[in-house]
Image 1 (cartoon, rainbow, N blue to C red):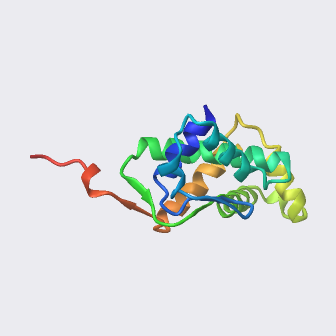
Image 2: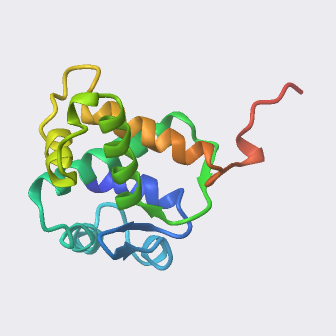
Length: 154
């Protein structure tokens, strides 16, 4: 269920998740709700309702799924700032355009459309560029590694 994806990300993001000016804060959300509760599902829907374009909403959902996989595979990661989905998507589109010079003459809106309609099954898929944008964000230092989750030999 998609709300579990968002819950797991929110648990790792003390400042919350932001998209299109709507913020889903970690506090008090996690303290007052459950991941299975209708109130949390409605709060997630409220956050996503600020997205006017359906294709952008789909990309935002895909991005949340990518972030969730990264967080699940790297439980030691903890975000240090709000997760701004718009900035990450913008970076993914820039990476997409930079990888294909045939999009150079297009307007920004046409370039975005090319990104939104790209095939999910090739090396130039939206998922590829969303994952690269998330990794770029991680490399910028917006996350920390918690010490208690590091491997150690006793």
